[in-house]
Amino acid sequence: MKAIVCVKQVPDTSGVVAVKEDGTMDRAAMATITNHDDLAAVEAALRIKDATGCKVVVVSMGPPPAEGMLRELLAMGCDEAVLVSAREFGGSDTYATSQILAAAIKKIGVEEDDVIFCGRQAIDGDTAQVGPQIAEKLHVPQVSYVAEITVEGKSVTVKRLLEDGYMTIKVATPCLLTCVKELNPARYMSVGGIMECYQKPLEVYNYETLKDDPLIDVDTIGLKGSPTNVYKSFSPPVKGAGMMLEGADKAAVDKLVGLLDEKHII
Ligand SMILES: Cc1cc2nc3c(=O)[nH]c(=O)nc-3n(C[C@H](O)[C@H](O)[C@H](O)COP(=O)(O)OP(=O)(O)OC[C@H]3O[C@@H](n4cnc5c(N)ncnc54)[C@H](O)[C@@H]3O)c2cc1C
Image (cartoon, rainbow, N blue to C red; front, side, top):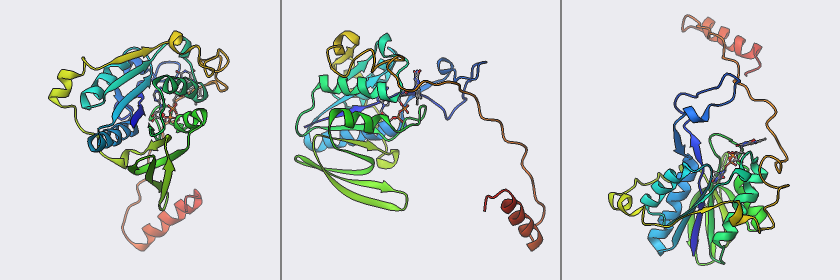
């Protein structure tokens, strides 16, 4: 088997979020990181590699600097990397992004016992749509919100997180799993891994590489092929000053409950 992991490079929204004058996010001014859920997916794939010796291929669609992130993943133990990058792919919404990533995964090759991994959600776009859309386009079964994985030959048993518990699902391979960051903490790059990562294969798939796939069409990729377009983006209004209630007696509690009730919070 092999594991194919989709990984997105995202701006680090936990630090200072830079906003341009027009209100859009200034991505160039922010540090970039590997999306948290995707790191959990990479770790899950590497644990399967530790147990079975399978190959792990990481794939990312993004601008050329995303190569740095892919090299780090190779230094963690992944075997091969694919960077999907072309001007024609820019401006893609989730529909177009999943068209392109599905075509790239087909090019990598999906065999009977392969497992494709995605994160549950990217911290910038935040839609959680790309993984399930890739599965649809590859016609493979999918399980989202995966928190535990056991691979047994041509089936995978997973624990799927629900709001108030979890369910256990057995799914046939090839399949796609979207992983939550709670799945497992990602390992660090090793010194040996850093030394080796530039010898490992990193291929770039551009428009020429993928253009013959039926999923790649001017009407299904890039800005023109995106059924949705961002019409306007803006920063949410800053919350007003908080209110401090004095005292720790019943009167103060009644006042607090009254205020929360007034605002329909309780
Ligand atoms: C309405 C709309 C319009 C948009 N228009 C534009 C636009 O004009 N220009 C623009 O640049 N962006 C645009 N975007 C953003 C773009 O669609 C997203 O960056 C992209 O589709 C990924 O979606 P997401 O960030 O919500 O990922 P999610 O669906 O939350 O990601 C889930 C998982 O899918 C995988 N994944 C997602 N994206 C990638 C990737 N690039 N490479 C590898 N794996 C990936 C990862 O495993 C990730 O954890 C638009 C988004 C929307 C919703």
